Length: 421
Image 1 (cartoon, rainbow, N blue to C red):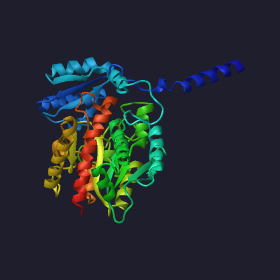
Image 2: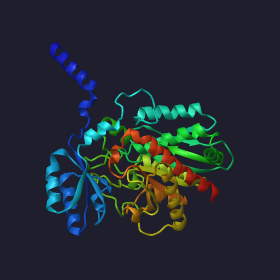
Image 3: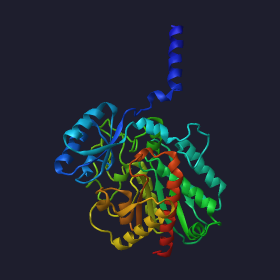
Image 4: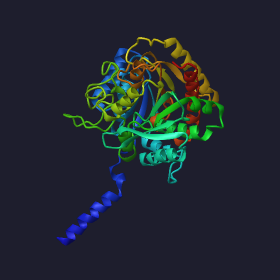
């Protein structure tokens, strides 16, 4: 009996010492790009989605696929040859963007020697980001303050950084990152932005002018539980990690969970879908915390920026319908100028326009919600790239991506400062 007990304890110790055993791997998974040219070909993609657990990367779901749309999707290794045969039979134009997803994910970390502690040109796990958040506030008390706006479903603290020189009646810009868990480049940008703010304040004219006259609220990661899950269990996880009563499927898409024509277009009522809108608007603790904070600070917040990936897009309302925003001409002009500025550094080309007509309709997004709450300048960034790596953008691209995005954010901030309302 005692011997059996020792064996059992040894097995438990081995299991707990090797977390890799439970991490989902993507060996042999492929990412395909197709462009359907007619309704029959669109139907083929619907058939695939309904029968083969296809993971849509762009657009977010098969419901948003229409003719002449570029569609990127991931297929599990054991289904790849079947999918390829079907694409060929249907005469669908396709190419394989990623031949072995696991190899690309392994290559994301340019150096496998991971120095301990936070680094701006590496992807950091949540534990490291949280320590960094507390540290940067502590080290820069004259410019940065830290608050908590809520907790996640799994009980993690949602930290918010406020950047700016203390002043009276200052207006603010709110920026969040990390809505969708697998979009790692997004939180990397929020960290980069905060670093550049504290590093260049007082030395660089534009940043100094912005922070003297505006406050910046930065939420480094909204969907913390999902982000943790991408590091510990499955790199391609997208949604939150909340339980859905009556379903074995986990999570809600936080960017379909806002009260902006909630669950009408481009969102799903099925908990197993990646674009599941949740049981009600703001059903997720994370989206409710964000919405509550913005509602409480509507008198000061003048712009809302939400950072996603990928596709190299700068979008503004509306995504929930094809109607144009009241200040559509102004938003269009500002977006055009912003992407032009962004391109000056590395030549990266962005597309811009209203969400619905530029990519696809999607209701319940935070940008539309913020705009309808009265925040006149509301933008969604979709960072690099256009699909070569997709959600597996290598660390070598963190620096150039963040540098050019910083130029764009500063351009918008200066415009807001000059057009305060």
